[in-house]
Amino acid sequence: MTTPDAPPSLLPPRFADWLAARGWSLRPHQARLLEAGRDRRSVLLIAPTGAGKT
Image (tube, rainbow, N blue to C red; front, side):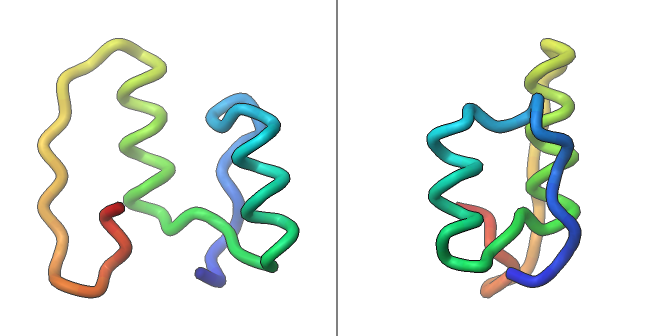
């Protein structure tokens, strides 16, 4: 994962630290999914195999 990090408020510090320790960051669609959850919106994520859905 080499895309820009999501705003810190989207991830609990424990998860943000875990990603940072590995040099990883969220992919854009992962950040958008977290933003929707934060805003209490329902989301259906459709992304190709290998896109980092999990």
